[in-house]
Image 1 (cartoon, rainbow, N blue to C red):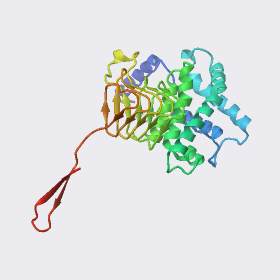
Image 2 (spheres, rainbow, N blue to C red; image 1 turned 90 degrees about the vertical axis):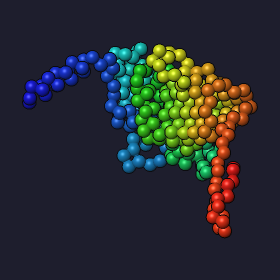
Image 3 (cartoon, rainbow, N blue to C red; image 1 turned 90 degrees about the horizontal axis):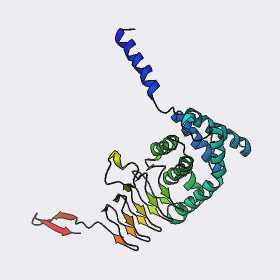
Image 4 (cartoon, one colour; image 1 turned 180 degrees about the horizontal axis):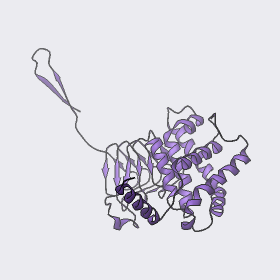
Length: 281
């Protein structure tokens, strides 16, 4: 090897010692999520599926989670085995919430054939499921792994939900591509959002890291495609409807209808005069 190569390898060794965290592999994190989903919702078949015995699968998943947590051991609040046990104690509650999410999608989307289709096919449900799993790990003070899980779902679905967001019951993401939900977002119950919606921050300065930067969406709100709602002090009151392409940085009261007003001009040529005829819609 050349002198330059040796110098670079020495630099990598020094850099390696400076990393604060050691992390599990992304493929292992993805496998854990997908196998846990198959345990909870066995509506799909896989040629290389985990065991069909529920108890055996549960034990294997417990071991997988301990393995995922092990590289983080020095930064965990307690042992990996204890955290894994606490996490799986909460899985029944996570399962109940996910059923509510799945039923909300099934009941409100006229294109949904049934619960099985929503669970197996809908990217919105998958992203919500991974968020709820990751959120519980974050609640147990596990660093980085929760974000790794939601970024895995982001790559699979195009839906970016930070595990720190607080999301209520019966949440419905329709279509979903391009949805972004920031870390300090608070979402109430029975909220429905469409593709391209951003619940983001007005400022991205690092000094805002410990402050509420993202909006609060109260119960029974519908947010249509490509709407952008920004700011930690922005509150969308309950039972409101936010129309498509709205840009919102101020709070709105309950039962509000907010829409983006625009004009579309259609120009047709007259067959006789060849002069354009204008229509304003």
